[in-house]
Image (cartoon, rainbow, N blue to C red; front, side, top):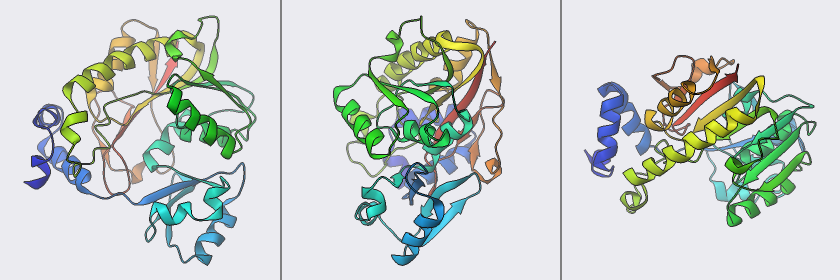
Length: 303
């Protein structure tokens, strides 16, 4: 099978150990699909009807999703053609995968609260949280990498997210004196949900060592998040990985050491997603396909 030939054998083993043969088949098929271009309307600068008008004027066909009025799927346009439109240049829309729009929606950020985005670059989710709260929350966006923080600054400014304070710091080093009402931890991961199986260099960068490195940082980041989350408040943990080693196993480990509980994920339109089984009830794992990247999301409450 061509798809399997292009995927590292250790990943096939991981998938076979975790999922049924039917689910593995779905995942492999999902890897082979070319995803449609998707974007989010930036309600800080525009509105849905204005964007629909521009798309129609440019003969760009679009579909919507049930779980977000702001999310658009394009059926006859490439990213390059969208990047030539003024609505893109002006920051009225933000090119973003559907899966990565889910964590901020599940976080359900509130106005007049202190929100931490622990690994914020390039800023898609940060600016989405700003839009969801109408720029009326206080968002601290952390990024430790010099190059990535410049991209974060650029996107925050372009999207008009004036409620965002950018901090160049490893969020694991944030002083325990600080505390937050809500936290988004979109943890660095292996990217096992977003693999390009046609990339000849896949085996060079997607390795078992990468998974091992990712799990160490995921564990320390989640521990820190729980520490600085206010008691009785909620956070979201997400990754673009479909491996339980980076998801349920990390959460289970932290659950043994901290007083937390899983808040079951519910939202209108969840039934439209192609999902994979998870080892923790109430968490969500989206299967990669032509619309979605493989993505894991958990909502956690500090007791």
